[in-house]
Amino acid sequence: SEAWQAPEWDAPPPLELAVDTSPEGTYLPLEVRPVTPGGFRAAGRKRLWLRELHGLVEGEDWTPLQRTAAAADLVNAIANSGTEPNWFVNADLSLHLGRPAVGEWIGLDTAGHVSEAGVAVAWCELYDERGRFGTAAVSSVAAAAPIELPTSS
Image (cartoon, rainbow, N blue to C red):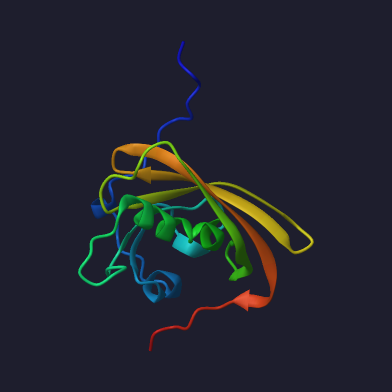
């Protein structure tokens, strides 16, 4: 018998979406293409595609695991924030992968967030252009002030 599967992500391919031009989207050394309106500051569930703009080690390509881990670092930023800036910093990050990522684009789909008394946990489903390949979860603690990124002038 087949094991239960969550529905597949129905996001358009990354190149069909506009590049994020928000402070969050332009501050990172990544190309970010939000699926949901509002990008990082959306009020609800956030979904986005991203890829690196620079190499991790000069002269070497990213490995699938490096690419996935770099993308997963944004779980805190998208799952623990809303229309206001993020108040949480990463304390721990876990990856659970059913297979290696394929290609340069990683999709993050916010799957959950729980917080109380300055502690939060959040998780995202991970996608590439072939489909879902894993999850990333983050434990976070509240910062003394919201984490504001510099704006470009």
